[in-house]
Length: 127
Image (cartoon, rainbow, N blue to C red; front, side, top):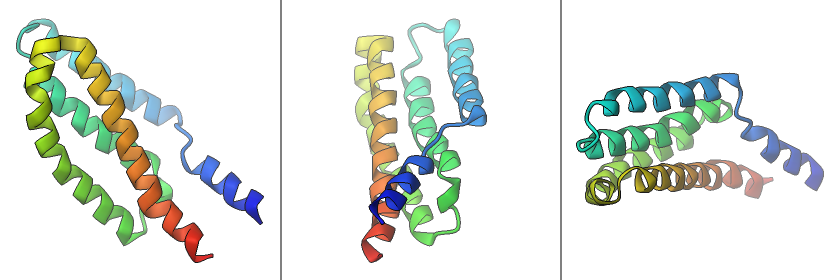
């Protein structure tokens, strides 16, 4: 019984070829658009990272697309991205690319964890 739940949780998040292509497109877009403006990528880069942190997990969790709880979670996370971008923008301008990369990674992992715990664990607790 436990092994069935464990295998379901592992197969729920398996980045495929299209997720990797999307990540390359987003990274390439950021590189191309910020190449000519090394001083002004704070708003653009921060917004792009926050958008990617929502878009990539949304595409990857296609198994949950038919659940209203999933879409409510995505909507709330998207709304929460706005104050995050406003708060982090200054630090991105100050500490540049490494901070932007750290923000993108941490933000993405937080979004993945919230979606997982809000949508997947609630199903397991009902069994």
